[in-house]
Image 1 (cartoon, rainbow, N blue to C red):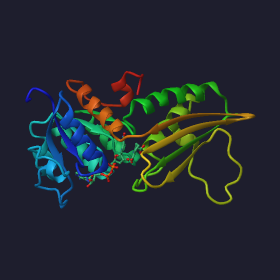
Image 2 (image 1 turned 30 degrees about the horizontal axis):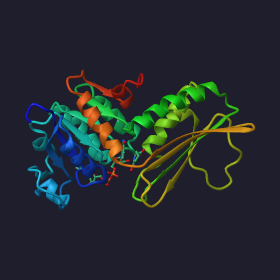
Image 3 (image 1 turned 120 degrees about the vertical axis):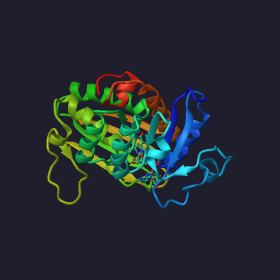
Image 4 (image 1 turned 60 degrees about the horizontal axis):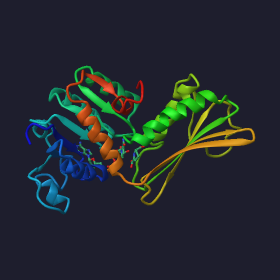
Length: 272
Ligand SMILES: NC(=O)c1ccc[n+]([C@@H]2O[C@H](COP(=O)([O-])OP(=O)(O)OC[C@H]3O[C@@H](n4cnc5c(N)ncnc54)[C@H](O)[C@@H]3O)[C@@H](O)[C@H]2O)c1
Ligand SMILES: O=C(O)C1=N[C@H](C(=O)O)CCC1
């Protein structure tokens, strides 16, 4: 087993962390090398399998990233922005591929990740699923094909625990749409509306977010034109979808040149 890549799961007790521990454990082409949680978390020191309510996996939950990454080849990180930015530097030091699923990152956070990616392989995506990444390609094409008579709106829905909006996926889709029309998203971004907003501005891309229950992730990109409306949609029905993409990224990153890559690179769907 030592010749397959060792994977550290960061945020092991989280919704995605548990899914990742299980997926790595079930994979024949990688091994679970470590499990990380934030200092003070009740799982620290416990076997991660037992903490998850199952059989022991022989991996104790750690709060020391460098210790957890000793002898590991990748760290998969679906946590929170501050933790992810810190991990980017530490993973580079440990020469581990850093797969980032964390969303809600600011421009400043991304600039710090870019710096770390000068010395390390980082794969980052607001959504690791094949379907959403393919959808970004379609959205870019449709946005380029339809002129600004077609208003673009991105509508997303997620579970009640989600802390960031718009979702990372919504931003990926908005960026693809803006790019299709030759803009950066910031130039045409229209945040959620409230009150007397005035009429919609031509060419803007609007964002709306629904939060409730246990919705895993729903995204619609609406192209609303005169007399007709086109909607491109993606529904996630199982979180294992995101874990599957993250594992693929961790393997893809092995032996690559340093850089800040996207899932489009991993999936061979075009330039990032
Ligand atoms: N890119 C994707 O495909 C994708 C899919 C699902 C979720 N996400 C994103 O992943 C992130 C996590 O989502 P979630 O639903 O699992 O959240 P969650 O709150 O259930 O889990 C986050 C975990 O990270 C842990 N954590 C925080 N700081 C840490 C640190 N310094 N070291 C180690 N662990 C730390 C928390 O204790 C928690 O267990 C969010 O940003 C979410 O938007 C991305
Ligand atoms: O559950 C979440 O949180 C999700 N986050 C990602 C996003 O922000 O788009 C992907 C979907 C699930």
